[in-house]
Image (cartoon, rainbow, N blue to C red; front, side, top):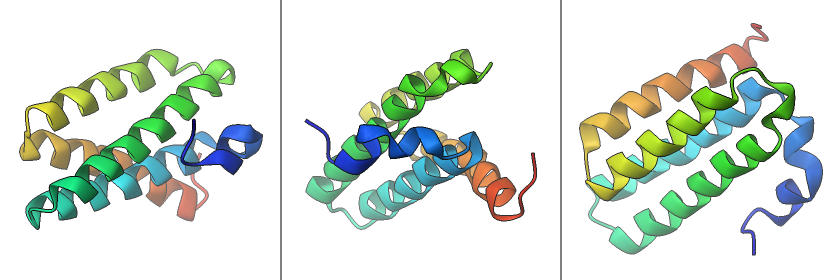
Length: 108
């Protein structure tokens, strides 16, 4: 069962890697804001959406030589969230920001 049903149906695979990871970054940014505001239910839902997008990226990543890095991102993201390590989540957010920046400016 997917939250992002249209993306899971194949639309996610049509996006560039920069666009995919930039969108994951948007969810991570939302997650940080919700955690800071103490909204644990919304934070959990946002975590699940971000994780789903990472999983979709892994699924469609067969064309990318960075599959190992995406899987490591997934591992670090889960660990940081479970440990409520906001500093690590901020690092992940910063890492993902550059993908959104590259996509916005069409940098390869």
